[in-house]
Length: 280
Image (tube, rainbow, N blue to C red; front, side, top):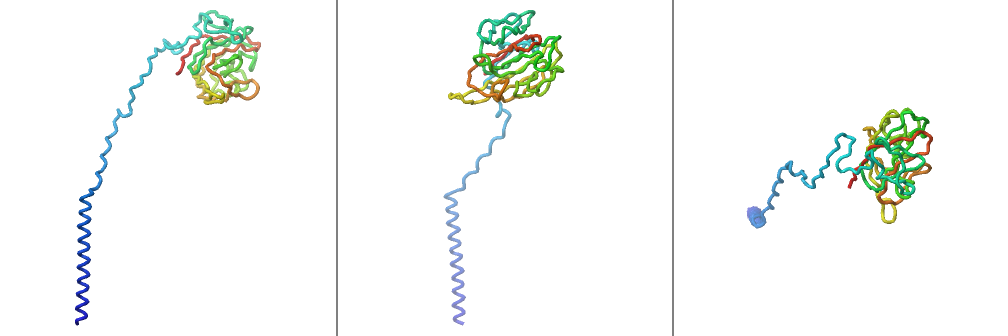
């Protein structure tokens, strides 16, 4: 009986010790919690408002549009207004351009060769209208052939050509028809009007840029509308235009725009209403 009593007493003492230890830990925990309160919750973000994504600066410059869609806007550089060729020179020797101006229209003088703008440009929006004679003859590339060289670096024999050609019921290789980037990009459509009717190109040109060592930094891009129809959609050029061989880039700066006096035997084509807007 004495042994059993001693054992019970020891068990009781153990229970009491455990209870005392637990109480002590609880007191210590409360004390620590009081000294180190939990970090406050981050305040809620304000609800988004429409004004958060509104930009008020810089304001676009004001440009007065033309009186109709083909007329030049107020900030345009007028390259031909039907009066004279003051903005153009011979591409081969920079002498005054010798194409024919009559009735508000320029007609190609094939014997005089290509003409180019007096000024050089980088990036721009170009408007140019052209017409193949109603009584045009020939076929394929020998029928109303010309070209708009969107940049023609010195010596004025190369560049990047947007093809001009009678492509109304006139079969030819598709990367050489009207609206093509010659020998590089087939036009997305053929919206050519009949010979004798005016055709319209509206072009956005992004000139290539080059590193100091002459290597290509960024390629040229062109978007073109032909009679209001998209025919080139931000096309990346692989280099300049080559009749034979593959296109390639050679370092150049701002360059003139050149109009081609093609050597085919068909009647010469005409141009009118040429203007551009420089893009910064």
